[in-house]
Length: 325
Image (cartoon, rainbow, N blue to C red; front, side):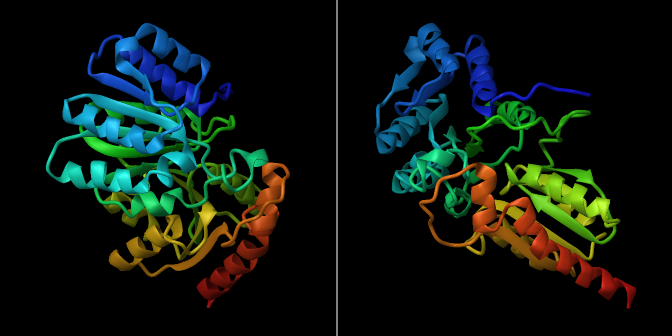
């Protein structure tokens, strides 16, 4: 089955545009960031659209005010700017205030990880998972394709809450070709095994598929799980699945060992009292100003297919040897 891949951003904005025609409570706020679909929102719903300019801190405060008035707010900017540039405003005006006032605010960050490959580390985003999952009351949503992105929209308008959606700026292949993900689970099992499972999020789900294919060609089968809700997945269901494994490998397009996906899963494993060996694949901490393709940059920082295989192959072999003992 073939599904034409689409930009996550455009799919999500299209859903917002269509829903705004039937839901008068949806309000859109942008920080000097555009697209053809966004032009339609601005033209068709001028009374529920604001472009605050290059002022992400103001973007957050306006979004909080609109949410207090009962609007379902979608705030839109480049990923590192909507998270790091205005972190204090997010903490005080959203995470803290939501403790006492019902709010529905959805921060849309475009350009997760190395999406903006030619723009360098100022526009690349390796820290967003870490800092956003540190905030109480926030969900961190990290889809791997446009299909997941589309289904996540429904949960954004259905109930109050604070959400950060980290969307890739590049078009990625469709992952869910046969059936859509179960959004309430927060994760999806793509491949099963009885020894080692790869758990990835966002762009790295595609890397996990390539690694699984390479290992399978050598007679070693790995499980693959896409976790798209990093903060609010079904712990009960994930524990049941991981209890069947001996080890996991986490893959993220963010700093390794700095509070991201790996830290979340290691904490989950400890709380769940699972006996699992773990290996973390993430960006080697540090910044690089080198340019290149996304694949080239990934290999340099240790998360490319080949650089990951160099770490995963001996890890898997050790685990399998232990199982045979």
